[in-house]
Image (cartoon, rainbow, N blue to C red; front, side):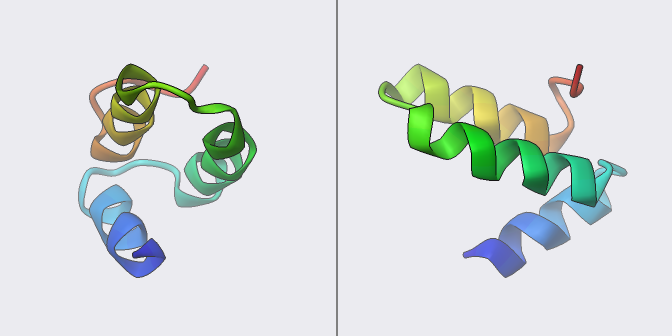
Length: 50
């Protein structure tokens, strides 16, 4: 699963280190489907990291 996230981030020119660091801190906090969709948008490159 994480390999797929890495490949998706790389293809979409997302900073892989920053995205993974953010995901690993935010995944435990995600409670709703919207929370998980927001995390997916970051990997896809729709939502930029702050």
